[in-house]
Length: 342
Image 1: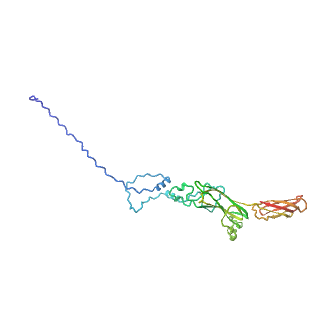
Image 2: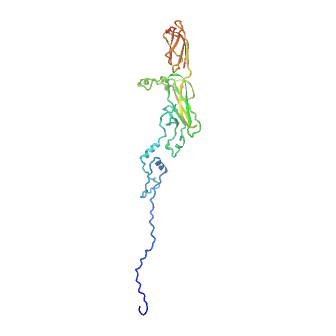
Image 3: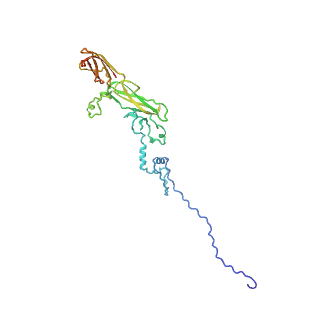
């Protein structure tokens, strides 16, 4: 302190303050445009992959830009895997079930059209188009997709032992399919031949009979055309049946088709027929018996004059052998009356 005046000591100088850098807004990042996308795959490709039960592969998009093709050029197709070709080949086949166990009355046939033999053993209408032509699910939505207009089932032909009078008909059991409306009108048709019994045996170890046969005398020379039939009698040695159904009236499920061949009531007989001692062969005048009939013989007289009896043995479809016995049991012969019926 000098002269009574106070002086403030000098303030020490501070280090210069460091100022924070100015907050200059940063430049926006450069905009990177995504690469152009490849053409979208059609939905049916995804549907096919899903139907094939293959897991979808989720691949990251490629970072290499896809070259842009001219508008006139189609996009490149990725080669199909092997499983795709097999699936496409299988989808072009018609939906036909394998023929397995047959229902009662439905016989295997080598000539039929419009029907498919279902694996359960029934006949159902066939489709006029392949399942692969359906671009949606219509083939699975109805009973029969695009059914044919009619169905024909032909049963195997039947050759009789000889040409004879027969009665024939068929029994048919059919119902409308699921969701089907209308009616079922099955029509029985037959064809026949009166020369079928003259055909030689085909499936034998000897081919000479077939080679030497006269074709003009065989079954096919006298085979009739197909004709509508209900139930009736005819003389024939070969007969074949077929079932015809109009699908435009209704779509059926045929559960049974049984052709039937039998004979009407047949009879034959004669009175006062002489029988020699030891027996005599008597042929039927009615040649329509296909099976041995029942024959009854009654004695009229015995050659020895005694009371006797008569019998009929060795009966077949052509005739029988008659015997007349005396009271002593001797095969003496005599006169009989006889009658035969099926």
